[in-house]
Each structure stands twice: as structure tokens, then as C-alpha cells.
Image (cartoon, rainbow, N blue to C red; front, side, top):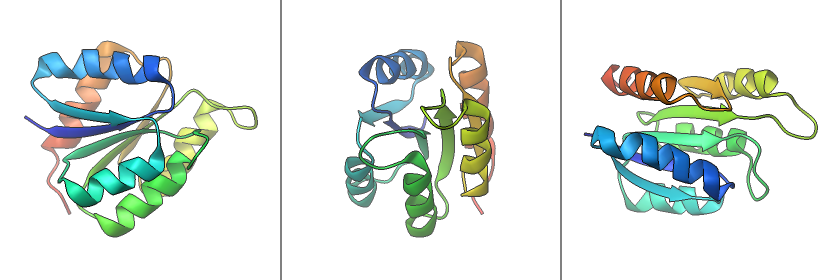
Length: 126
């Protein structure tokens, strides 16, 4: 199956995403920091990044932009529950504009996440 990098500053969210995707046969690496995610991307090939948008060290938008520039074939799924200045719908719209292949709002629904991940992984890389 796929090698997935999960980036979210909330440990509980990372844990839930892992528990949803591991039974599907995916290999998961997760971190709470965008800067560590970029380092991991330079060390290991990933098929998919799942990233939060609102994070303290580096926004998911910046991570998406950097990843899209450095690794144009990687699939990117943005997730957001919003933040103090933006609602979740605005965040996911902006994420798509910056290169996310797809986006969804929190709370994450198990079946919707699995379907979205399967759909993204099935698409050929450009």
C-alpha cells in the first residue's frame, strides 16, 4: 500500500488518522511540525502527505507550497478545523489554491477519509 506522512500539531488527531489508515495497510509516519515534515520528505519517498492547515511552527499552506515545489508528484490532502482567524472552509479552499490535491474539514469521518485517500492514491501522478 502507500507510504503516508501525517502532519498535525494535535497528537490526538495524528493518533486518530493513524488508527484509521493503518488497518488499510498503509505505512504511516507522523509529526506535529511542518519543518520536520520537510526534513522527512527529503529523506524518504512518500506517496501522500496529509497535513493540517493551522499549525504553530509552519502553516500547512507553507508546507503544501514547499512540498509541491520540491516534490511535484506527491499527493497532498489538507485537513482543517479552522483557527482563531479563519474558518475551516476558508482554510481548505486556500489549501487547494496552493496545491493540495484535495481537502476536508475536521472532524474527520472515517469512511470519508479512507475514500479520499484511496481516490488520491489511485490517480496517476502528473
